[in-house]
Image (cartoon, rainbow, N blue to C red; front, side, top):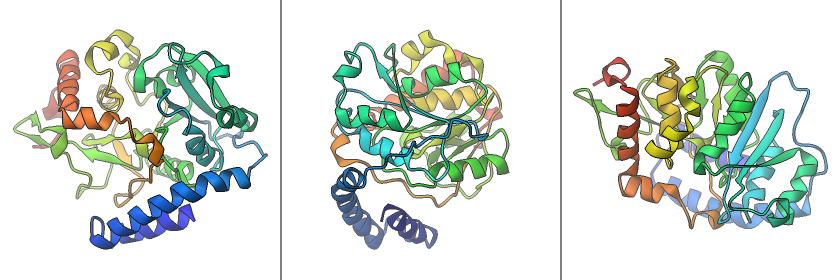
Length: 306
């Protein structure tokens, strides 16, 4: 059912019906049904087979993080990752040591997924940056797919990311992102960035967002991505923006799997706590981006069109 719903929403999007009454109404109803049906479906039709392929030559590692406010429901998101058509080599969940008392502090639904290939690791708390930081550091030669912990991901997520990566080697590939808007060599506020652009080829202006899934090929980010002190001081709540600037420092472009791709449906119980509310509503994204640009002396004229 999930794939059928996504295909219909994608069809409406390609036909220019996105944000219409039909699109929004269908999406609201679909979201409610999926959130009611899918958790029960996963439990009734519990899979026993491993959801990763250690020997796969794709060399894909899926990585994500979470926190206590969402940990009760993250197993639903991970189930969709374990049921991918293209199996990753690993799925790693990073949790802050300061927020959990080890594995004994985690819900049984989550712990059960270890038998099917989920790896749970504990680390220093870098907030949302945990999702990529430690995995990229440990596996520098792998294709790293970062995802958020609150989405129902379609079965072809990894397949589409890999297909796009093969088409555009060395390019960061995503299903969702914002096109950075620049005027007179000044980046406009985050709230004015566009979800779609007339140019669908790889570009510096596309800023991928992790909630849709993003594939980072080896060497696509500058080694300064691991400057932990800068992360803490400049943009502790803006991992997408940090990763974007680190890609610019390596002259790496980004591209969408499809320009008309729709945003995925979220797990309703996880939406009580969202960074988006403070980052966008309080202009924290703009402040944090300015911090990074100033620190690394990014000349916007080199990358973004006015």
